[in-house]
Length: 389
Image (cartoon, rainbow, N blue to C red; front, side, top):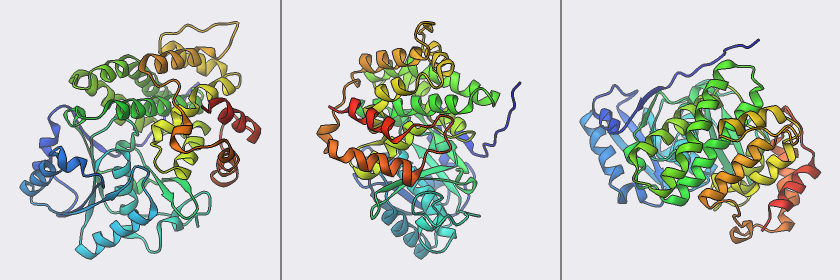
């Protein structure tokens, strides 16, 4: 038998051209802190100016925080929260990809709670204090990958400890999420792929973690895996294909968020987050791709039926002689087809002598004891060694 247990309070405004609704839709305040990346891309593309104009039409004042980096850090969260409180902001907007949205969510926590963000981290060196409230969050997506637009997570790095941890609390569910695929047409091919695979791993890992328990998650996951495996190669070849961008945004930003709102991902994500915490220049999707093939080869025997299900969702029939290989085959074929199968860790400053710290932080600090299958430190070391090039 199965159950259904879900909670998704975010109002989603989805579809080409829907950003225009920002000018007329009721917003959760009158003065917003707008969080954007520090590379100036949103301004160069004209998206930031357009958002500011739409907010002005809606009677909303705006204060900008534009120092966010690829792997967002606690320092920026605290600086942005201080700015928001100083300027009297009553809600926060994340404009861009996962980094800006996750920062906005963390800022929302610190706008309503004392101390520093790490007081509220529930793993690692965090103080594990409860988060009972947060300022309202609105998201405006320009990427298709993290699912943070519709889930209760943000992922932030503590620069001092190199921990990259999840903060998962209901108060940071976005109140409103604007997902307009037209804003994604200028996304570079590399980021399109990294984030597209991030979305694929989100829904695949959640499917594995769920073990067919919550029926609704299985429905979300299957739909998302089928959509991503079909449309990611299309959008990688033609980034201006609005239909492909629309399907990818639907799978990643809606279905991906909905699955993560129900159940955790697996240690694949924890290992990759550890890499991102230690090497801030490595985007999250890239760190996932580094280890993906070796990871699923290692775990396929632990949940073979679930991995074969995922393979069949991607068009690969299960092989009774090699249980669990279906997903490995489908995944490597997709990686090969899109040119991301053999990405060199070495080009990003990662060295074999870093592996021990990656393993130790993953297991001893963040922890993977909650996982349905438990990898040993030796297993993770094997995955890193096999992945290295």
